[in-house]
Image (cartoon, rainbow, N blue to C red; front, side):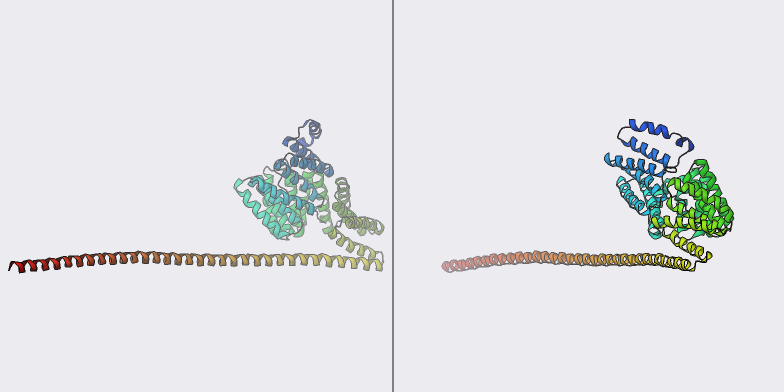
Length: 453
């Protein structure tokens, strides 16, 4: 039954509203017709949406969409990111996780184009939270880690507090409750020392869920009551409804089905007011449990049927599985063995289906890792082959240079030898001419001497 608070966004500039800001709703509406079609009007739409998101979520979505459309028209990328950040907050509260993920992935692309690490880190955390809500924890961790590295240089206490609460939610989803509590305590302590009251309430609520999972019901009750007080103080109806559901879980774990009834009635009223259909189904189921333990099986059946109709209509499979078990117990309590077996069979079938999908998702993740590993291995092989080819080319080039150098040297020496050879020939020819001259002179001298005699 516990309903986890969806603290999944880093909306750091105007995400949390004070009581005074909520009183300015009419003033903001009066400014709207006078606003020019520029970035200031985008921010006005965002502010208006924030006034309504905890009380009239559909109206809040209307203003957020208007902010997004105007931002696209005037090419105001920061405005598009603000629209996505705020709009997906409401989507997640309403349980539309796939739509939220698609928008958050888009915001990451937009943030990267801005080359602003702070904005990019926020969008990475939001996207990681979308994956966490879809129970794709490994992918969530990757986005969180990248975002956390980008946040570290800023040394901002408020950012660190929210990051710790987001990590608390992550490890709660991974069923690492003690580790989750460590982050939860860090978040609460930081926020108590001057942080946002609403965010403090969310952190308390998330801590309470961990205490329930560890069986520490008194600590859980204390956390939920702290969160409830803050919700009433700040006028956050979503947070308030969540605490009634969470306290209801404590009452059920304590077998206190008398206290369960008023908590579920308050949760039901607020859930219907806010259009939170899964919360409404949980509240109806809680009331059915109350009447079941009061042995009023007729009323218990009515509430159970209403809860199951909602779960089927909006495909809340976890709630359907729990309600099938409850319907089976109700049928057996009324001595309707056939209906009891029917719902027990539906419960088993749905449970098997959910388990098979979990196994299939895990298998796909393993296969994806395997394929990624193969690709990385092949890339390394190709890189090695490329390096070998480059080395071979370098060696061939070196050999070519050596051969070319040798050829040049050989030609050079050949030219030297040829030059020496030519010089020797010239010297020999000159020597021969000189000898011939000497010989002629000697012959002339001999003739002259003969004539003298």
